[in-house]
Length: 251
Image 1 (cartoon, helix red, strand yellow):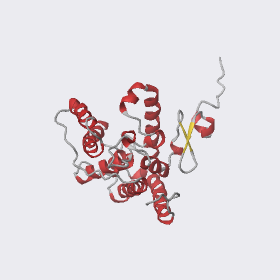
Image 2 (cartoon, helix red, strand yellow; image 1 turned 30 degrees about the horizontal axis):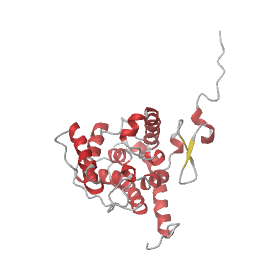
Image 3 (cartoon, helix red, strand yellow; image 1 turned 180 degrees about the vertical axis):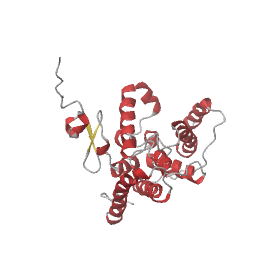
Image 4 (cartoon, helix red, strand yellow; image 1 turned 90 degrees about the vertical axis):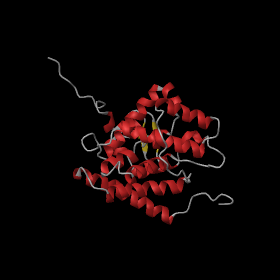
């Protein structure tokens, strides 16, 4: 008969982040484990900060568009889905708003590159699952399907390409999307190219709108979401009090 000696590394996520292997610094001074993330490491402030400073299309935008953040992308998708009646419940809205949340830590790697780097996609998917768990979201309380989110995502890319991508790449990219679905149409949203600060503010405001004003399917996660909402409110207050750290000529 063998005796099992518990290994302290059986649950590596119980260790401090610095002891779980490679990690990334976060905006609040925390650390994010690349290989072994934990829900307790998730901060809505870090997510808002990262997504608002992460530029879509690797920053390769038309000259007229200085910046297009992942957070603006996520807010526009969520706002469109709510306004068009596709989403009614709080949990579905949050699942859509946070659908790219892992990019707050990993950046917005272009899809063709992801396809060449399967290990990256593995770590990104693992982090995304942990983030969703941290907000109490699961298949038990979220009705919107991944395929529906992907459809909205593909449609908004048509809007984004018209607003922010130069020819001939604009048309070539749209042709690739239409090859998958020839009937696909734009969402018809206005791409504004908000700066990072504006995008961050709108992200937190949309998060609070979802938590505070949409009906809940699962009241059991309300207390958990309220803790994240408190962080979002505190950061909005902080943004009101603090000016940007750097003043550039002409700003």
